[in-house]
Every structure is written in C-alpha cells, then in structure tokens.
Length: 438
Ligand SMILES: NC(=O)c1ccc[n+]([C@@H]2O[C@H](COP(=O)([O-])OP(=O)(O)OC[C@H]3O[C@@H](n4cnc5c(N)ncnc54)[C@H](O)[C@@H]3O)[C@@H](O)[C@H]2O)c1
Ligand SMILES: N[C@H](CO)Cc1c[nH]c[nH+]1
Ligand SMILES: [Zn+2]
Image (cartoon, rainbow, N blue to C red; front, side, top):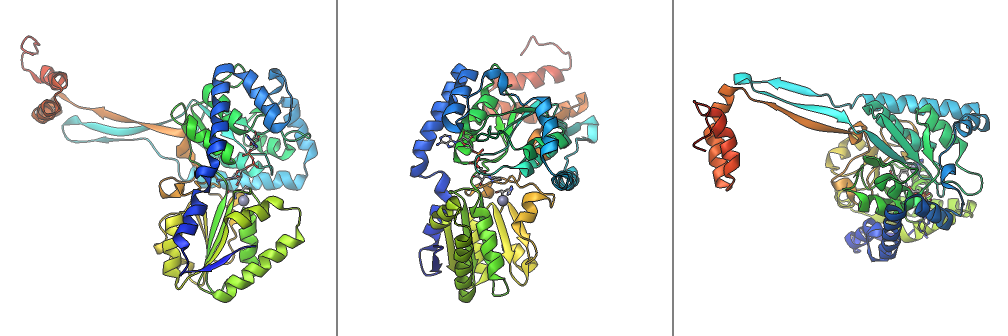
C-alpha cells in the first residue's frame, strides 16, 4: 500500500530514511559482501570473477568464454525485430545530438607580457561501461554510456553486463552495443565486474574510468574502487519524485511512480501534492495497476518500503522538500512548471509538464539517463561526455612576466616555509643567472 501522510507528519525524517536507503545500516552486510568480492578479484583475478559469477549469477564459464564473440554480436541482429533496431538507432541519434552540444573545448588565452594560460581536454585511455542486467535488460543504458564515450574520443571502450539467466545476454543489448561501436563485451555483472574493471584480471583489462548504473552491489562496489579508477557518479537504485497540483492526471502520476518502482525493490517513488483529492486518487490508481500486474513482486516491495505520498500546503513547500531529497528524477506535474522551476535546486533530471513522462528521458529525449541517486544530485550530475575527459592546465610565462611576479611568489613560498619554491623563481630572475648565492 502506498502511504499518504500530510505536512504535519515528520516528512523530513521519512524522506531522509528513503534517501538514505542505500547507505543506511541495513546495507552494511551488503557492503561486507562487496568488500570480499573486491579483495578476491584483486588477488585472484579471473578465478574469483568466475567463482562469483557462478555464485551470484548461477552461470559457469571458463575464462576464455567471458568475452562475447563477434559471431554472437552479429547473430543478435537476427533475434530482434526491425522495429527495435530502428528504435535503437533513433535513440542513438538523439542521444548523440544532445551529447555533441556539450563537448568541452580546449582553450588558450594569450595575456599581457606573453603569458599563455589555458585548458587542454584529453579523453581517458580506457573506459569500462557497466550495463545492468539483473532484473531487466538495458539496451538504452548501453547507448547512454557508449555514445558519450565515443563522442569524447575514448580509444578503448570495454563493456560488461551480467550473463543473464540461462538465455545469455539480451540480443537487444548486443545490438545496441554494436550500433554504438562497442565490440569488446564481457558477460560479467555485479561487484565482480566492477572489481575486474578496476584492478584488471588476466582476461579483463583495467580501465581508467567506470561508468554506468546498477543495483546496490554495483553502486557500493563503484564507491569502494573510486581512487583506483574514476567513476561517473553513484547511480544506484532508481528514484522519482513528482510534484503535482490539482491539474495532474492521477492515472498518469500513478504510472510514473510505478515506472521507477519496477526497476528494483530498492527503488523510490514519491509524490508531493497540494491536492488531497489527487493524493487519494493516485493511491487508488496505483493499487489497481499493481493488482493488474501481480507478478511485479519487486515493484510492490519498492512501493511498500520506499513509496510515499505527502500532501503539502503549497508548491513552495513541495520544492523545499524536493531540494532536501535531491531526487534522481523530478517531474513537475503542475499547471505552470516553468514558474516552479526556479525554486528547484537539486535534481538529476527535471521533467516539465503533463506530456513529459520520465520514460521519455529514459529512452530517447537525448539527455543521459545515468543519474545520481540517494541524495548524490546535491553534488553530482548526469553522465556526460565530460565524464570521459579530463583537462590539463596550460601555463607559459615569459621572462618579463616571471620577473614581475617573482617577489610575490618569493613572499608566499617563504610564508609557507618552502625555500626551494622561492629559489626556483629567484634563480631564473637573477641578473647574472648564477646560483651561487641561493
Ligand atoms: N540511477 C540510474 O541512472 C539508473 C539507470 C538505470 C538503472 N538503474 C538501476 O540499476 C539497477 C539494475 O539492477 P539489476 O539488479 O537489474 O541489475 P545489475 O546488473 O545492477 O545487478 C545484477 C548483478 O547483481 C549481482 N547480485 C545480485 N544479487 C546479489 C547478491 N545477493 N550478492 C552479491 N551480488 C549480487 C549479480 O552479480 C548480478 O550480476 C536497478 O537498481 C535500477 O534502478 C539506475
Ligand atoms: N529510469 C532508469 C534510470 O533510473 C533508466 C531506464 C532505462 N530503461 C528504463 N529506465
Ligand atoms: Zn526507468
């Protein structure tokens, strides 16, 4: 049952509990499992990867079977419909168009006294893309990872995805990978896949950055390997927060809540509304939809544990609660979404108006659907081209420019107790160029 509470209840504590669901005490035993997996893969390489694949994915392989073959990728095209290939191509085109607009450009500035300053962007050498595949299969996530990596110019892109239960990796995932130009694919998932990419094994190459969403095990693993490798963000179990007024359609709102809840039993689905009637109607519509789909056990679990409707006094208060939660997805199902937008400060992606279900962003609007969860939108953003780039600062000083700042550097270095720093400038500006008096 999706609970309804009102603003007088302890809304903050309830929202905090839902927000913290992936880093509260209940997940500590999962973290212990992940630590064990990481350590084993670091020490034993392929052997540990194969062991945990058998344990958690119930699939037995030899190391030389981990890589998906070119023949499998080609065969995948025979197993999907033309309509699916067309849809993958449409999504790919729109995602690429969006991401090309955001490519940061290297720049240099020529200042006075021949001072040159700038930034030079270069891609990482190797990127590891995680494509989830435990409960659903995610061809859309292949594109959301691979397209920006390609646009960034990453020379080697490696993809990992769970082996699937029995039937193998979904052909849709393989087709999407091939359409995005990724052909180095390994059938491994979970924490063992993240460990393999972070440390390298005999078969799986160590990468420089790992991107992509995943369940709690994947997300904890990414958090723990950060430092050995870069990561995009903590893009864990999905969440949606909807702010709605009386103009929203309760059936649409209920469906959008369920659309996030169906990703994972740890997914979160929250409605903040100024209309008590809408709250009740959404509750009824959602329960009805759940009854019509009784196989959605995980969805019901997510709704029961991390679903909530709050009736608030104003849209301003709704925006305040939403900012504190910092949702992955925020829908503004209100009469004037552009009027509400200025009050919103933290959200991975914002969907405006009654005709913009979050699924548009999941699949093909263009912006990335790999987004920070569990409050990480307070400081992190969507996966993008820049995730695969880093920049080096460029600095060149002329002799004249150096002489003008020598005293200031000398003073700062002396204040820091770092005499060689001061000397490194002094020896360059000394008229006779000697170092005898340093
Ligand atoms: N935030 C985002 O941008 C975003 C985008 C898409 C999907 N998602 C999320 O991605 C996740 C996909 O999850 P999924 O489970 O379907 O696929 P997944 O690939 O993330 O996880 C499956 C893997 O988890 C491991 N695993 C399962 N049970 C385990 C256990 N008991 N102990 C250790 N390891 C275990 C297995 O190795 C398996 O391969 C969902 O949480 C969904 O909400 C998030
Ligand atoms: N809603 C997910 C992000 O939390 C992305 C997705 C992929 N496919 C369907 N949905
Ligand atoms: Zn989704």
